[in-house]
Image 1: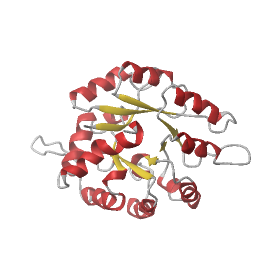
Image 2: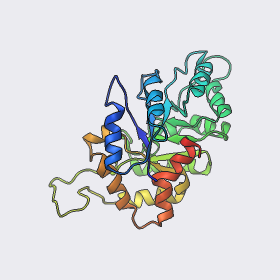
Image 3: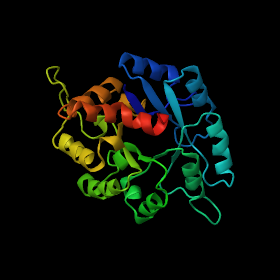
Amino acid sequence: MIVDSHCHASDKWYEPVETLLDAMDRNAVDAAVLVQMLGDFEHEYMLEAARRYPGRFVVVGGVRIERGDACENIRRAADAGLAGVRLRPGGRSPGTDPLALWRCLEELRLPISCVGKAADFTSPDFTALVKALPGVPIVLEHLGGLARPDVGDRSKMAEAVLELAQYPNVHLKLPGLGQLARRMAELDPRIAMPLQMDGVTAFIDHIITAFSERRIMWGSDFPPVASREGYANALEWTRLSLGHHPASTLQSIFGETARRVFFQD
């Protein structure tokens, strides 16, 4: 089974869920995690998609953490089928307990998909948050910010992100290689993967060694991936680059980890 841990679909922006379904079906992707785009807090479109296509989708929704009723809103959304929440690493609740919503998610057993810069994830404040919430899976998007264009010195930041591997509740989303490697200047059809891959495979192997395959999950970043290598290549080139790993490792990264965390199978 292949599970895409990071997709966006909306009736307001990007693409509708049917466009995503077409890409999934053409590439034998069984299920996907619908992650709400930043700035949107209405979950109904994605929840309705999950109801219309049972078994294909779960929904990770946004929340206005600065509101005092954030936890109550999430409880209602969880009752309606929400399977996780998207937060920024620096998001804090008002009032006396800045981690109130984070603790609420731990109580509800709702995993958190966390979006931010590598510098945000490597701060002492975020490490303290992770330590305070051992019972909730915290999934760092875009390799904990290491795949973002604003990462700076990736090698230096990688060592800091890898320090988080000591906390069993921290997971990473592995994106398509288009976020980690640049396209070759000339595209040659004889080349299986026309990306500048110097050091990229070793970099990913280092991350797998630190976190293990049980805490890494592949995510396409649909539909922004269309402006990079495209959906099919985001899957196939990433699998090709990890082809030296055992089948069990690939099964975890491309399906089992995301299913265990977000589908809670």
